[in-house]
Image (cartoon, rainbow, N blue to C red):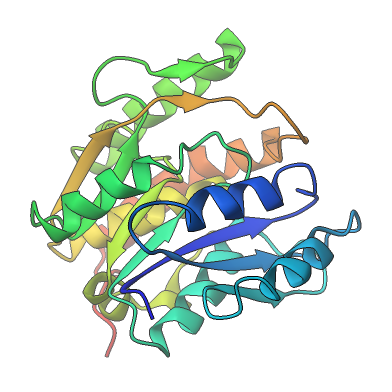
Length: 245
């Protein structure tokens, strides 16, 4: 068993899923993969099951009965991982917006450079986003600025979904006390780790908009992020962010 596992939530990713799995499994470092599929009607899970015959000890699948939210998918994955011996746990999208080769850099940031949580950052050294509409770039960029202002957290890309956690971080956070399911989930996990004193390091990446499949972003997810950040801040001020007992 590898010391590292990549959690990839999926919903209707049949165009990407086989290619992203093989890209990760072909890396020079061994990473296992856990797919969390939310009942994709396009047959994404069936493709994963077929690939499991080829990679029985490295590719795992949790199937859920419908779209239950990004945050709950990751929480389910975290619980599954913590029942096993993995030391480095990654979040990554299925659509190649995150370059699988950058997993190696996130791993090194935690394993070698001492980060507890490494963030694949679109904004750490300028704006490194390819093929996004300008409106979405601005929305994402200023959302991260807003998070920094409200929370005081010195992370340039707080909404990033490309992350490596050391096991200790996920063992310390009360995962069942995480509030948000959508856009705000990524911010809440980073902010909780920050409030608990963990070392967060950003690794500059180039984010490329998906070529295949359909984006899952919508206005309601973004709205959750805007108002959720305020709720997180007040929760921290009144002692609501605590270590798992």
